[in-house]
Amino acid sequence: MTISRRDVLQLMFLGGGAAALAACGGGGSSSSGASVGGGGETPNIPDGGDGGGTPTPEPPPVARELPLRAGPLSGIGPLVDSGVDGVMIPEGFSLRLVATAGRQPVSKLPLFLWHPLPDGGAVFPMADGGWVYVSNSEFVPGGVGALRFGADGELVDAYPILKNTLINCAGGATPWGTWLSCEEIENGRVHECDPRGTPRQAQAHPAMGRFKHEAAAVDMATASVFMTEDEGDGRLYRFRSAGRVSAINGAEGLDLDNGVLQVLEVEGFENGAYMEDLESAA
Image (cartoon, rainbow, N blue to C red):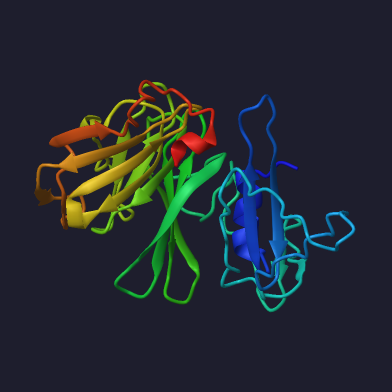
């Protein structure tokens, strides 16, 4: 059977042992499969039928196995109905609805309605013990909304931190406390937002590329931001910053307007070419 990325993630989260992925290429045929076992035991090899009872070894798999250990939540127990929109949660946990698309999360002026198609987001701790949750809108228009929680967990405010963008999909939190929101459109940009700020403070960074952005991850050790692209032949990008500057929230961060944008290419498979034979990747 085939196995999808979602299946792999589920195995990592709930798997009780190891999962193995196998794929065959060449010879005009291909196959793939997955198995989950406990303890990594090797199955018995059946009798080869030669009368002597000597097992006939099976040929080695064409692809390598990818062992996956059980995730930290693998023994979390059975799921139960949370009572909120049919969402299932583990026993002992609770769930509450804090925002609904098209409705006002907090009664106040000016009016702020929560966005449709919430996508990538992150949580930022605040000095008073509370936190801010930011969420992209993968819609037209896009933008980013924020929910401010107090130290007691109560929702105390809701407001926009980015406007006038399109289909904001994923992105990433920065070590200096800002949110990088990425547009998933043909000439999409990366926008930096302050979780406590306003749309006026948000800043676009064209130097980080104009393409269908997906996720972004900051590596301070190398002054780099790694970015993925939401395309069938999408590439892995690296923006190498020219240095450090004062970010939009006043903290010291990477200079996202000056640097070098690089794209990963594998020799022999330039310009988005695919590798048909997995053995060639050895």
